[in-house]
Every structure is written in C-alpha cells, then in structure tokens.
Length: 81
Image (cartoon, rainbow, N blue to C red; front, top):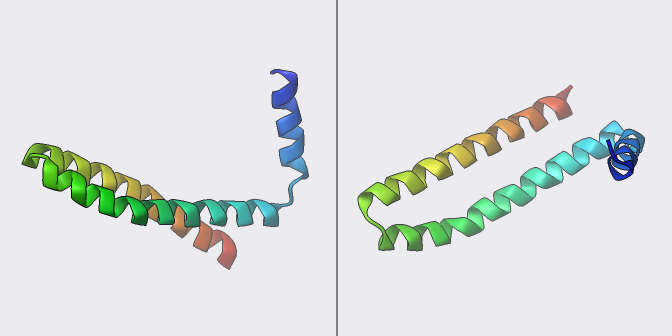
C-alpha cells in the first residue's frame, strides 16, 4: 500500500459514521438527479435506434435503477436503526 492510500485510509477512519451516512445519502441524491437528466437523452437515443438497441438500453437503465433502489433501501434501513 502506498503512502497516499494509507493517508486516505487514515482520513476515512477519522470521519464519523454520521458523516459517512450523509455522504452516502448525498451520493444517492446525485445519482437520482443524473438518472433523471439522462432520461431525456435515453428518449432521443431510443428514437434513433432499432428495437434491439432500444431493448439493450432499457435493460441497462433497469439495472442502473435497480442498484439505485437497493442503495436507497440500504440508506432507509441505516437511518431507521
């Protein structure tokens, strides 16, 4: 492990659990915004593609949304405990 990696580990240990949850929540909110902004781009992309490409694009968005939902549920569970 290099010095910079050790420094990052040391910094992470100094951050309080409450701050970590706050950063996790902020990251989820940012990802939701990005997902929403990319919806318009997806619509344009789908209009230009054939059906096979459209299905693949939608499947990727479904996976992305599934991961986002899992993280949001994890945040809910963390903040409720």
